[in-house]
Length: 202
Length: 136
Image (cartoon, rainbow over all chains, first blue to last red):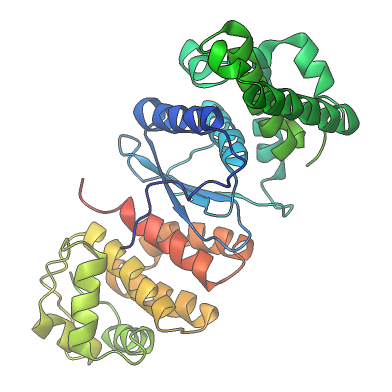
């Protein structure tokens, strides 16, 4: 079988920091939750989580190759929420798509837990796989509404561009401020890709 | 494994193989299942022609489930209509393991199918379905 285990090539605008979080979260799913991820064209369906008959065996997660890195980060947290809620019943596939289906209540419960895990963190390992600055109340309130979210993202991108252009980034390498900026951009990208994290329907 | 309705299973295999020769089908099934099916050419030929009720090479329910997924994947590759793939896949599984176990496995496909937009998505679902039944 043709298996694509690496995520598709990222769009140029996607940051290395965001890709690093995506990889860490994917590794967390693999190591701690026994979820093996691969990427394939799913023609509009966003993801499939296939659970084996035997709970000891690894689950299979297929993510649509067209999803962005930010959407994948959201999807991993959402899958972790489904598993925390015990939705991974043997031989039952969870399908993530925009369609309303019979499992709507299950998806809404997972959505609520995803929001909670994203903003407050679940266990230490999930938290370590995600940008630490997402717990900032200021950032959260700025990202809560469509208009302020777009403005915040634009402002963060502008600051980053300015910092690179003026060489400040090199001068302040590994500085707390540049790390905060990088992480804040990741959080803004993920919440923009999945506005339901802000409590809005995507 | 004793085939319960050899004629129906034969028809399903013939439909899902599309334009592939029986030898080509055996090679593809071997590839798809990563060599985990001990299905020899002679046995598959006899199953496909409805000439045997006993498939010694397929001797566990897991083997049957892998064959079910693999044949449906071949159906996707051969551009067999989705409804036909599902119907014939069910016939194969029921023919091998009987209706109660087949219904258990098949229920997930029935529930998932309406959420899949095209044949490519169905094929990915089937590939992942097969993967969780491969020997670890």
